[in-house]
Image 1 (spheres, rainbow, N blue to C red):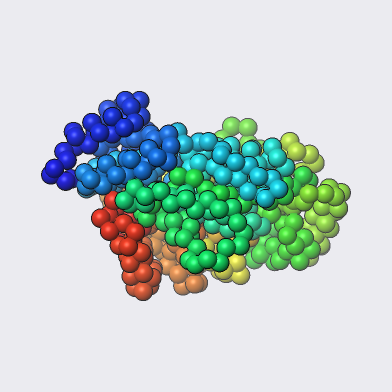
Image 2 (tube, helix red, strand yellow):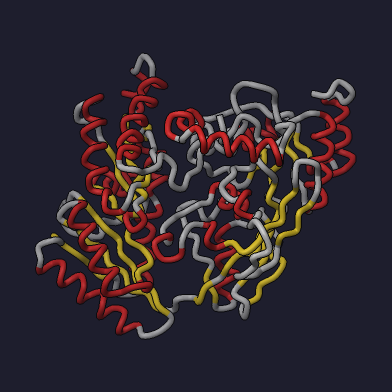
Length: 478
């Protein structure tokens, strides 16, 4: 805190700039912003500000910089690693929530682009693209509540990375407020621009540590009008990997999703989320959702799905399978997949990991991680769900609420479990964070798993763009 600008002075200036309805100070008003949605992280904030424009964001940054008060940019607060709430210790920041910046500024179907503000809900963006016959492909379980700014700050992945890539691959430009309040307008919706360093990539995945993203020019794709989806039980993860290769060979770019989960994860969904049904009869150790999409030829799409799946059955790779007969069945099957986070929150304490390894190493990762976890707690339940098509597996040791409460040091247990899994990923040339970001959970792991040269480069970039540690201090880079 700058001695010349007291907290009271800063609050007064923020109120003068934004109005009373956009500056929240009481504990009852700020509670939903200072605690994460799973109730695992909670911090304190000087206040919560709700700007309605990029210019207001710039004003807030200038006021906080003058006062020496840090800023925590926040979107929908759907982080799975404590990335969107203040730390428990240290000076209380100003939380800058972008929920009121939700305008869709432009949709250009001919250019395959749209410009949206950072507070737009992901599902709203998807729907606006679909209204003009285009697709914004980033899709994840929290798409009804997460904001575009949050997906940008974490380089979110989801269920369509196999075909369309992470968020980074679907961004053409950004508008960013820098640490001195400067507004950088980089919203050019171009697919080719070789005029120097592509600055937008500095801010995508930086978790709000380098600047505040206020708008983005997003890349749109042709909207698949026909889908063919199957839910099947592979013999094991190695068989699933082999089947993935078969679909890639027969379907090419029409393969849009290949999601895997184990029986325990499916059981949690069925037991804890209403109106979810087991897609298959009988009990199977492993389940896969595979989907194809195209802009034409629905019959041909279903034919190649049926043919490829039939070949896998003939080879003894599949125990059972069902093909969605209509859009309602397709939606129901996707609801099972997208209900994982809700189910796990209700069911138990899940020690979520977010590892990615080369696709060829996924079966080994699952096997080795299972052995590593059971070496610590024999027989512990493990939920596994992942985007097998891109090598991202969420390996989740599960403790009942009673068992977790009975631990003498639950924090140490959580660290040991995650380290066991993350060490396996590192040994297989993988990463501990594929799509969730670093947040508070992963910060200590940066020192453990990132090379010194990588950390040094990150610190250099941070020092250049935010020398006074205004944005999200103590995050991302230890």
